[in-house]
Length: 157
Image 1: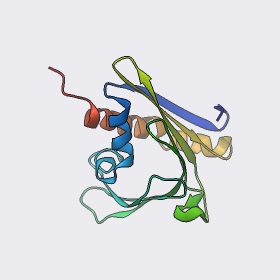
Image 2: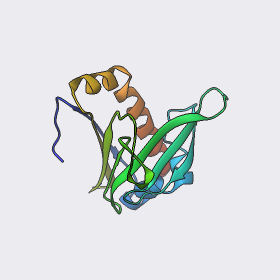
Image 3: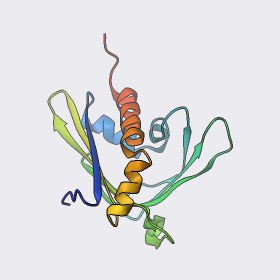
Image 4: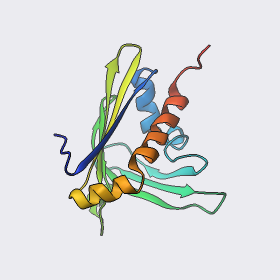
């Protein structure tokens, strides 16, 4: 997949944890729930099947309110401990969605002392990309990656 600056957004971070640990946090539903949405919001993985065609159905609770729909997506590519691709253009089981906002590719690469984490989010056109940026892509995804890092990194002494 080639980065297209006209339609894509990307964010990266070094995480001081082994790639296998970061992978588990991404693919085990109870771990995923711990960091996927910016705190103090809470995530619930309703259906979470990290296999091609598997469902990624999450709900969110903000300010103690009842859970509400958050993401209904489908995993497209699952390369263990290396790469995940998912989209909201499809639901689990390859079912077409009525609307779509984005597709995302998460890559994990070995780096000295940890993992290089990169998220690339693809949109249909520049307007959708710009709308996502205006909605706070860098703040939101940056916060979530920071939460992921805190979740998987060993405590510093």
